Length: 344
Image (spheres, rainbow, N blue to C red):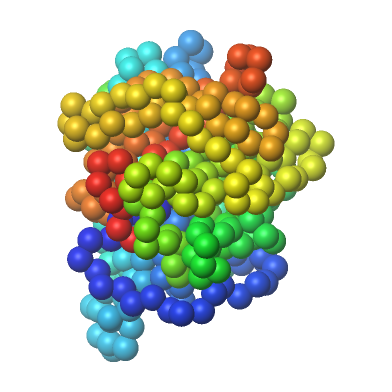
């Protein structure tokens, strides 16, 4: 996941990312020398018969024009955060957003092991487990995510290509099948919940080709313990500029897809009354593992983040069906660049 950063003239470096092995716990933390970074947790949880989707994302953005300034007030790094909850029973999404410059005890993206903070929101990794704490007007959650599988490097040894130029890439790993426990509150109703989550962490210099307007992405935890990720970058005419993904079997075998091996075909669309944007809320996604159908659990899961990152996008809880029509998993679908071209 990524965000538009309005009004920031950020020069791009000309070099491709260095090929290196990911190192943990160091690479769970921030990489402030690179331009853009995000930590992205999506998942689903239940409290008895009630079902919820949730997401929390922390972004770090390096502001190139201020790096030489000595003033402690210079905005050298910006920290953004988005959070949302989908109440399946109410068919409603609630969301919130924040932004601040790093420092002064208000916002921080720590190096070393992960420790993200933005006022009273946080995402912290300690003793191998992640904890997210978010409090907003309409919702709150305090959730712990415990690994049940090893880290999954994406792309070629953790470098994921996002376009035809080698510079268009990110360092990228996932943690699928995270066991989730904690407490979730929506519009005054609080409950203990449990479920599964998916974590992505990416950092990069130039993750998109100039002709790309946005992307479609899925991260799915399958019921049998498998993990499926697939994405594509789209041109303005809707055609695919670049695609990729991965599949890890229950036994731990990992297949990394090359460009051209994943295909997204829209089946059903929904139009937002708020933005006027039209999103495919049901897809057939061809992957090396199977032909899957991805179907939104709730159509209206559009987020307006113009007050922080400048983008309107769709991101929501979705079910996964195999080629026989059997529901085999659940996770998140994200679609950007439909309301307007995503600018990074």
